[in-house]
Image (cartoon, rainbow, N blue to C red):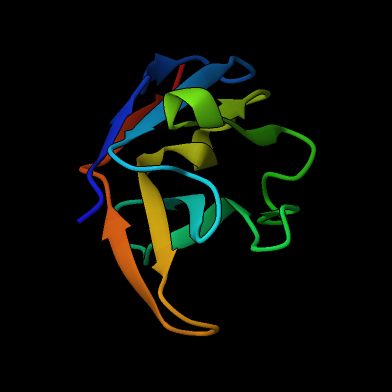
Length: 120
């Protein structure tokens, strides 16, 4: 069972920046794959940014060039640096861990979420 604890959310003005952190109870490198998702009111949860099993990164088109996912393996922590925030980025942001047990099989874990509100 992987436990994930997010922090760093809050209220920010349009154009501002925030950095989210996700502290994991286990290692964040292979076979575990970490990512960030978000869910806005009335919408489905969507991918924001994630590492891949090949160590590269993947971003939603809406955040490319503005958000950066990174990690500190020694601290078992994943970050999401968010710059140039827009009102449409307002959502609850969730940390996600896919703990692979095989080529395709994995157990999936979620953090409790952290609210990000972009408003003037």
